Image (tube, rainbow, N blue to C red):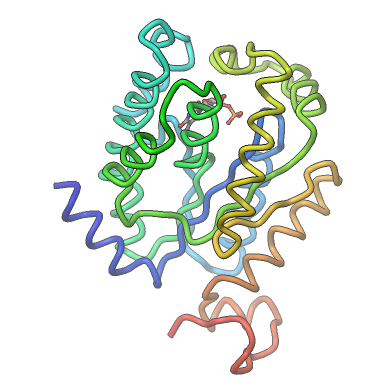
Length: 246
Ligand code: TYD
């Protein structure tokens, strides 16, 4: 079942972009994903927001286990497999069908979080993680990944100050500052290795400036349909300008 959907999504991916948001704790992903969804919807683009771990009913059940720390005692590889199990259901039931029908998908965390968080422990071979990623995500890879970057200390302080903080996030927030600095470095190294997919956004800026930087990258990198471009008051693209969906 999954292979079929993955194949369909890969064939249709040019028509419906898949955008992911990544970064450490308190980087402002959830605010920015909402702002981007609202902007896209405002120009008539069909876009949905989702998140990992979770995003589908079965995956949300796995999320609850993972973030409560229930899987920690089984070791990092087992945790990575559980994040992946949640991802399979999320792709099968939500992401691939949406992309296939032409709906833009904006996802709060995806494969880079597994590479970074589970990879940061140092006790899994990165090759094993790469194989797991290929098996699980296949061709359903993001067209653009925004890496919201800020110093770990600032991010942790923001996360702690978040009103009514999600207690479930304790599993990873509870790790020390050195762990979170490692995460930041790992996200930046993915961005350096895959510049065609990743855009690093300075998240120490205010929220409006972050939103504008994200919007500028979306307009530059993704195929905005003609009707939406007209609403955005954008000039018609030139041969060398931004790509436009036909
Ligand atoms: P969440 O409360 O969604 O945190 P945030 O607002 O920072 O996104 O919790 C998700 C946590 O799960 C976060 O600490 C990152 C972690 N995570 C992994 O360790 N591996 C993964 O593959 C994913 C998707 C998330």
